[in-house]
Structure formats: structure tokens, C-alpha cells
Length: 632
Image (cartoon, rainbow, N blue to C red):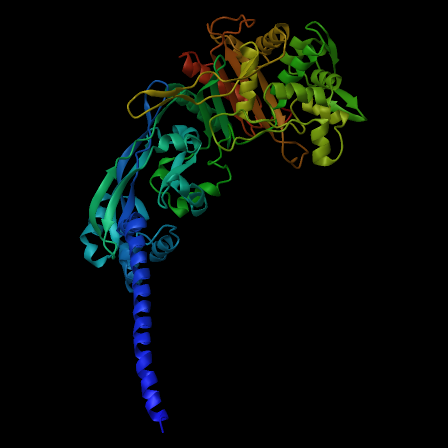
């Protein structure tokens, strides 16, 4: 009977325990929350405050102006000019209005709507980064786009700067051009501060000196609301203009070189050609012309796809710098290497005479002299002056393939010269090792003989060839060809001044080089170069004819023409034991097939222009097509 009273008594005893437990639990929970809150507010307060600030503050880049480019006389070659650009900010363009906006904008800027949408979709930045749709639009077009702003959400007119190349096509291969950064390049440069719609150097010096010319971008810290609208500028760091370049190029000499080359190409109906002028005492390039060429302003203004395809598919390859990026058989100009090696190795002396005949036989094969007659008994001056092939077949055979390759590499062949331009070709200098690695067998005797006259596997660039001769002319110093004289900061101070950059001192005796210079003068005095000897300026040099390609129906190979020459510091001096020349020049005529040497006539025209020679020494009749025998 007592149990019913015992149960309520036990329940009353447990209630205080439950309240105590609940109270302790609440105290524990609030203690944890308090500790956590204190941690968030005190220990990590700065971190979360910075994160909150970053969420509403956006860094906006301020592009810098690219540095300018001048010639050696201070004449402006590359400038920056204001231009209108049409941009679209994707975040501000409602998706349902994309097609309508693209159609209306396309009608205003003469652009296909599909191209506009493709440009937006291919952009690599964020939705808040403006995408350049078209650049360098006329002011009238920019005004029409601005007036239509209400119907074109997300579309903006921006004022930018673009490059202007003041000399047009005159220096396109040297200067290069700028263009939009492509996605692959942007991925590599993004960490360096590049933007998705940046313009970068794509060719020439614009590409080689991109980091110098670009400058340092500035930055604005902009506060934006959640919709991406700018509220205020929190901080501004100004941009720093890029440094400027002063080149070794002389615009006047460049014009003379281009005019001479254009005359020769027009007269001889040539498709491609090169003319280079250098100072052999320093390695400075005074002029460098490669034809055909293009107008780099087309790229600066935003080249159309149609115009680009026209250039890219042109069989004459105007986008290629033939002076630096193309390699050709040097022909008889390469006899400089063979003759110097033969003299230096003691295979012959200045008075040694070799019998030159119509041909020599090697392993049962006849190797003909270019005149199919020979020159009788010849020393080095006779052999080089008349460009006797059979003379140099013999010297090359005496040297052997590897010694010939050794001397070729000493003169800088088979490797880039290091000129300040991208995509320089290396050329080819065959040796036994090269032949084994390339074809699995060593050089044959006939191949070595052919290499000795600059044929067979031998290939050089025009800049390599003239640079090799500069080392002969200055007494043995092989310099790196240079196009840039100084780099100047925005304030006018000189950041870097380029001095002559010596690659190597050739291990050739003064006697060897003196003998080869005298032999080069003989090439002129014996009238191998026709009436070049009659000009009032005294020239030494070497012509060359180089076969290449595929034989025609009559079994004849096409051929190039070369001439590389120089005058002394006193251009009226005929003493070519001297090493003081300050003017070297090279002419190259691609696939000339002319009665005479087309390159020599081009060189004569340059000399007449450069030295203001009134009497006309040109022989245009030599530029008639038809002599497939060639001239050494």
C-alpha cells in the first residue's frame, strides 16, 4: 500500500538534477560560442576584415604607353596615337539580348554578328573585364555607337593608343608590329601582369624588346557594388611609360638600300631580294631591307582576316624577313671560308698555283668550273678573283670536310648571329658528324668539294654572310650584329647603351686575312664584276651564283645571285691591306637567272645613291633573263 506514495517522491527528487544538468549544458554552449566569437573578432579579425574588403574592392589595371623608337639620327620611327575602340563588358550584356545587340552593333561597325559573339565567347578574362571587339574605328563610327548606347547594353567606346609606324613599309621587318595577345600566350604571361585584351609585340623589335617597350602598368583600387557597378576609386598607382629604343639604322641609308633593291628587282623581274649595310668596325646594322614586305600599320590598326590571309598565302612570303629568317646556298661567296682555311692550314701560300681546268673528276664524277674552261695555273688571287670552281674544289679536298666546317663555324656560319630579331635561322654547315647524324653516313669526296664552293648542303642567311665578311674586313673580329644603340627611360636618361659585342677573335694570321682582302679586290680589278672597277669609289668584294631547286625540262637549275663588298674609310682608296672600312654591303637576288650578276648591279646602284655619283654605271642589259651557265 505504500508504493504509490514512493513513486511521486522519487520524481520530485530528480527535478533539481535535471535543472542543474540543463544549466550546465547551457553554460558550456555559451562558453564555446563566446570563445569562438572572441577568436573570430580578436584573433582572426584582421583576416576576415581583409576578406570582406577584397570582396568589394577590385584592382583595375591602367595600361602604360609603349616606348617610342628612333633611328640613329633621332628620327621618330614608331609613335603612339590615340584611337577609338569598341568594347563589350559581358557581365553588362543580358544573355537574352546578345543576338540583338550583336546584330545592331555589327551593322554600325561593319562586322559580322557571329564574329562579335565569337570574340566575346573566346575572351579569357572575367565577366567584368571589357572585351575588345574592334579597334581603330573612325570617330564617326564611335559617335554612332555612343548615341546608340541605350540599345546596346554592355557596349562601350574606349579611347586607347595604338602604334603608328611613320615610315610605312620601309622598316616593317626590322620594327615588326603589335597585335592582340592570343590565349596560349596570355596563359604564359598572365602572372606577369598581362591582360586578356593586351597588345604585345608579335614580330621584329616590337617582339624582341617587348619587356622593355611595354612599361609598367598602373592600378586603380575600385569599390564595386554586388552588381559590378563602380562606386568609388580607393587608390591609384600611376602607370610608367615604357622605355624607348634608338636604333643603329640610318633612315637615309635604309631608303637608299630599298631604292636600289627595288630597281634591281623590277629590272630583273625578281620576286625576292635582300640588301644589308653594316659598319664592320662595330657590328652595327645601318640598313636591312627584305623584299617583298608589308605595312606593319595594317597590324597596328587591327588587320582584317581577309588582309591577313592575303599576306599569309602570298607565294613570295612578304611576312618572312629573308635577311634573317631564310637560308640559301651562298655559292662562290663561301670561297672566303675555303681560301682562308687553305692558307691558314698551310695547304697553299699566296703564291701557290693550282691547275684549273674545265672540270676535275672525283670518284668518277666530273665537277665543272662555272665557265666550262678553267683559268690555267692560278694562285689564290687568280682563283678567288675569277671565282674558279676547280681551284676551290681542290682546296676543299685538301682541307677535308671537318676542317672546312671548322673554319666555316669560326666565321659564324651554322649558328645564329644573335641579331636583335626573333626566329633567326641557323643555316647548315656540313661535316662528317652532321652527315652521319642526318643521313647515317659520312661526307663523300664530291660533297666536300661542292661545300668548298658554297653548294651542296651548305646554307647561310644573308646576315651571316655579311657578318663573316666584316670579320675579314676589320682584321679578324667577329661581332654580333646589332640593331639597337641605346635604351632610354621616359625621363630621357640612358638606361643601357650597347657597345660592340665581340663574339670571337678569329684565330687567323694577319697575313691570311690580308691575302684574302687583296684577292677580293682582284675580283673587281680583273673585271669579273664588269665595270664596278670604273666607279670613283674603290670597292673590294665577292660575287656568287648559287644553284638550287629542281632542274627544268632542259636540265638547268635555277640560281641566286650574291654580292658582298666594302669600301675603305676613305672610299677613294684602293689599298685593301687596310682594315678601317666603315661601310660593308650585301645584295642578294633570289632566283635571278640573269645574263650577269643581278646582285652586283644592285650594289652598284646603292653606291651611286649613297655617294651621289652622277654618272650612271648601271648595266641593265646584264639583268636580262637567259644565262643558265651562271657566273661565279
